[in-house]
Amino acid sequence: MNKNIIALGFVSFFTDMASSMVTSILPLFVVYVLHEGVDKLGYIVAVATFVSYGFRFVFGYLSDRYRIVKPFVVTGYALSAVTKPLLALSGSWGSIAALRGLERIGKAVRSATKDSLISAYAAEGKSGATFGFHKSMDIAGELTGSVIAFGALYLLGQDEAVFRSLFAWTLLPGILATIVVLFFVEDAPYTEKKKPVTLDLHADRPLLPVLLLFFGFTFFLINDSFYLIKAKEAGYTLATIPLLVIALNLTQTLLSYRFGVNVDRFGARRMLLVAFVFGFASLGALYLSWILPGFILLGIYTVASLNAIRAYIADHAQNKGSVYGLFYGGVALSGAIGAIVTGWIWQHYGEDMAVGIALIGLGVIGVMFGVTQGWRHKEV
Image (cartoon, rainbow, N blue to C red; front, top):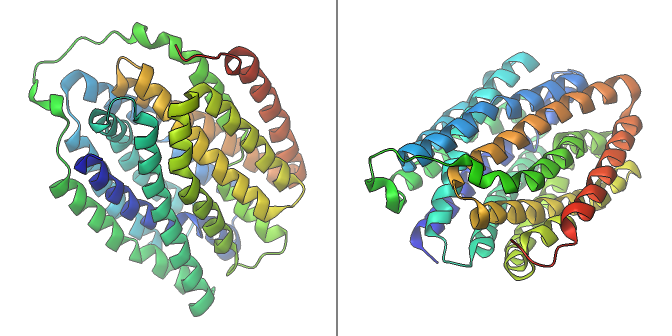
């Protein structure tokens, strides 16, 4: 495997370690330490995703047009590294939303260009396996971060000071990730071409039906932050909830590469349909308060869907940076609106209503995808 792919894997490992040290406990910190409502959590999730909408497409487009890749990737990782620790100083949902928004800008700057860089070094016909490896490193980092969060809460207690210390310590893996991408990752091969190129975005219009259905599924699939709140309401303690995140991340770590290989073998659309089935089953388990199975099934959905859709773009898009930007932007927009709607329904009508409506929506989108895309026997 190309050394740049391996180096980028370690960059993602350290970055996602820091991210998981935050996301494993942030919903609990907001609702049960700061005593903000679930609707406020929905606003935080929405800001953290929506703020990156325009930037993801813009930087993907600029990467294609001006052949700029590594500078965007380095900038994005550096910005994320310095903003996560500042959560230790937050005292309200508004300040948390602002900092999460800044951190997501860093992810917006790097996401589309990073995927474009990965696809540039992927061996021909191995896009699924390459993204599967990279996703495995992502989730291994998340697994490590969730283990750290569990250990801290279990051994040191669940008071406010422990939460804030975990946020502050994210600075260390963030710095390590920035160093690796700065000194050990080469720029994309085509960056020597300084002259802007003309992009034909109409050539990528055939990808829109698959992307739009994916966005619809993202809108209805409840964000994993709400899974953590559901676990607390079901009787899990603050100290043991990170164990569920460990189960989620371990599932993804063990299965990501295998699903990537299956994407290459069976085709992206087929594997995306399989992913939708697991996503629906995950939310069904959550509705029945089968908390651990819900987290495990969510992990399977995540690796299956992301490996499939990213490989689909890598294999079929003419303007990869722009299409990756459109993809991440669409996920950000649909996920943000979905989080606001979920949080509002959850706060005013209860968790059963929020999850039930989401299940109906997932079922409709899944059937639409199966009818319009999943029947095809050959990728075109």
